[in-house]
Amino acid sequence: MILQQLFRFSTLLRSSLSIELRRNVGFTAVVFNKTKNLDPIQKLFIDKIHEYDSKSKKAGGPVDAGPEYQKNMEDEIAKLQRLYGGGDLTKFPDFKFEEPKFDEVSK
Image (cartoon, rainbow, N blue to C red; front, side, top):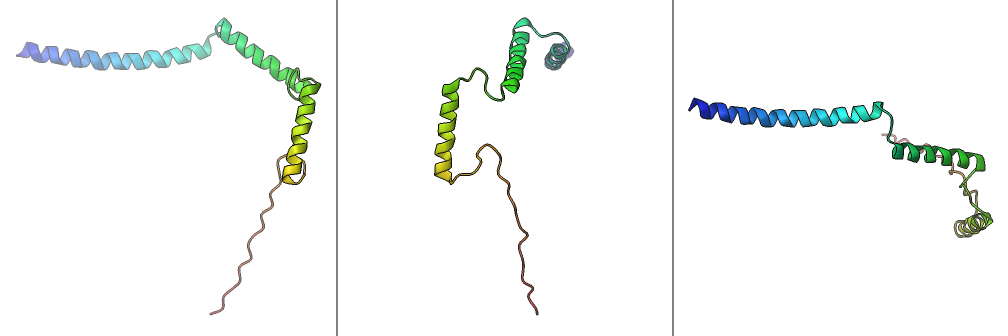
C-alpha cells in the first residue's frame, strides 16, 4: 500500500518536474539566442535588409526602379487624381474637426 502511494507520488512529481523543466529550457533557449551571435543565415538576411534600407534611403524610393516603374507610378497617380478629384496623393490628409455648437434650452 505504501509502495503504491509512493509510486503514484513519484510519477506525479516526475510529470510536474518534466513540465517545469521544459518551460525553463524553452525560456532559456530564447534568452540565450538573443545574447549570442546569430547563425550565418540569419546574419546574411539581416545584413541584406540593412543594405536595402540604406539603398532605398539614398534612392529616395524603391531600389533599382527604372523609368518604366516611374511611368507606371505617374499613370496610376493621375488616374487616382481623376477619380477622386485631385489633390496631393503623396501626403496624409489634414483633418479639422470643429466643436459642435449646442443651443441652450431655457426652462
